[in-house]
Image 1 (tube, helix red, strand yellow):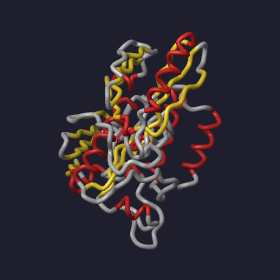
Image 2 (cartoon, rainbow, N blue to C red; image 1 turned 90 degrees about the horizontal axis):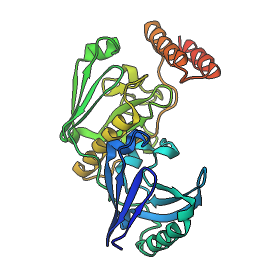
Image 3 (cartoon, one colour; image 1 turned 90 degrees about the vertical axis):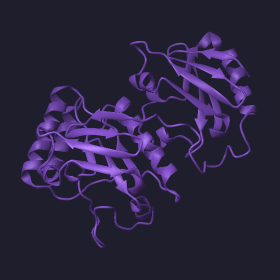
Length: 304
């Protein structure tokens, strides 16, 4: 189409086979958008286009990606807040007619497979090298391997005993990312074959046959855990997406982001005490309500 549609926080530039989304760098722009800077979305990666009323006199044009087309959304696994959705373009309501025109134009460009999941990633992942600070260590990715370097102030004794870790992409099968905006967020690397075991209902990477619980992320040397100010979305999610894209590209067999596990193995009292202390920090910072604090504290004490 060769046109440009400027909205709040982003501008969409339409080309013959794709739309280039350029994100603003203003202080009000979500930090995830600033981190991504720009993304080229092939029309073949889209399943539909919607136009809906927004908040406070705005309209929202959204391109809906096909499942499996974008490594960023695959890694996010539905955990992104609406304000962090890179496929939403918010415009003033008076531009609604123009937005409707572009919505119709985009719908006309959708491919014959728009209703089907993508067999491979069609959107480019953020580029390596990348790194970020988690609560218990520093994570790095150079495009070929992932490294974890533990912090003595945050890492569990299990991680210190295991030592710093390096994981070649060729030996990985997937990534688990739990948003740092939820309690006990983390990034976990899955060895090759673990995602298939999970899909089939078999044991996970830290399980023996007949054992249902896996090692908790704070005890798992293949995981880093997030915390207040550590592993923010705009750093840890692009990192997870880049690793996941490299895994898919390297492996000849399909792999998937495994679901976030619920529950886990029993911990020792020292680890429980540390978790409660960290929970108290979140509570004092106003990031956890009184009810959430009481409920989570009781859950942790029940694991003793």
